[in-house]
Length: 190
Image 1 (cartoon, helix red, strand yellow):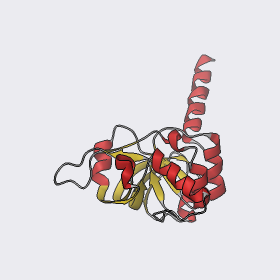
Image 2 (tube, rainbow, N blue to C red; image 1 turned 90 degrees about the vertical axis):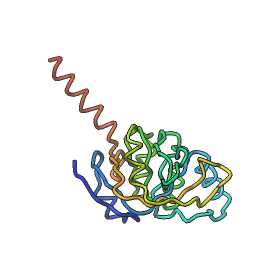
Image 3 (cartoon, rainbow, N blue to C red; image 1 turned 135 degrees about the vertical axis):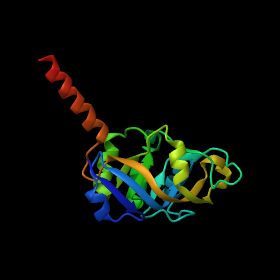
Image 4 (cartoon, rainbow, N blue to C red; image 1 turned 120 degrees about the vertical axis):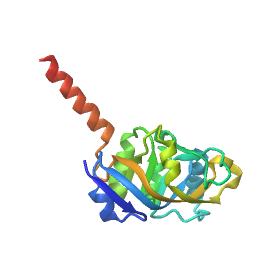
């Protein structure tokens, strides 16, 4: 496992050096969007229309903010379960999105989409919302205001802590770790 300090936009070279299980402290611009915004993105692309915000080359964060307290940039944010965006992710990677941040494992077709489009999936560990919140330096609502907490927001982040869960080589950290523990248990049984 290696730790990388990376800044968006990520190049294909950046993405190809990442391996499942690596830690990344990510800085730069990302876009926070959840289920409803993803569906609108894909529906818009399928109609051949331009998206309301340019997300090509970007990283999407599957999260939502809590209420913003006075003096803060954003309310506490938490990653949502990544599998909820699985129906939309391959199409968005095909469009040019370079990565996604959520929590939890993804489907086999997401691993293939990462390989096919040189993209990467990260996990932001659930339960560290206060840490994630402190890494967000600014935010701007940029699309789908009617979706309220699911509206698309541009975030400027600094050292946002992430783990590579699906790399561009088709490796899944969750699958890798489960197999490792199966082998350890099998050895104990001998």
